[in-house]
Image 1: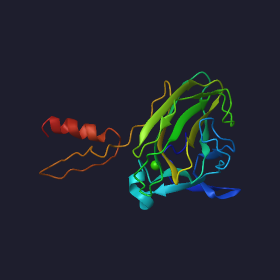
Image 2: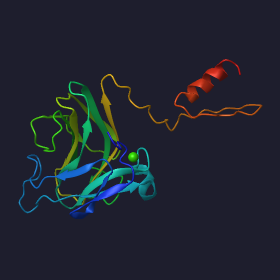
Image 3: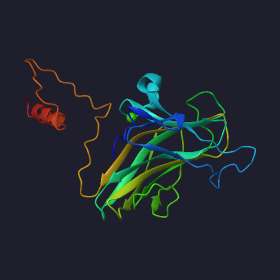
Length: 233
Ligand SMILES: [Ca+2]
């Protein structure tokens, strides 16, 4: 998977100058409502806008890296998301997950999300680009909240490529319908997942009377330093 962190740079859609998606990811949207959406014909479905939210825009929105991916409609309905095709060995079990949060509300306070916006993730076992394909294994719908929550799904690849899907829709055409994506993960059985980024609270306080030379920044460095300190260095 490329750019699970939805970080910069973003690319613009060739036909829509308000659709910017993180490198590695493609937008998709439907012109038809999801069955559980408001079916009132006076409230049609719209093509969402997509943009980056960077640390400079709103640091609270960014879960890791420099940005998160936002897709949104204002006072309208949407059924949309992003997808990415990933090479994999056929027969391997894969797990795809993402963290998301929402600002779905009549309120102009971006920390309020009291209306209904749902999201699920899926894996197309055959690597297709049709969001309605029978070969997609979908996870459960999760209702968006103003804090990041994770959802994930596993499936066994049937080809040498799978497609990772993120699918979101809002129930009512409230004022703000913003969905934020960050920190996606993709793991394949038998393969070592990349080391997790350091936790914000994972601070090591070191006092030395001499000079401490750190000559590499390998993932196990903290553990090595801890082991040294435990040994009474
Ligand atoms: Ca990010």
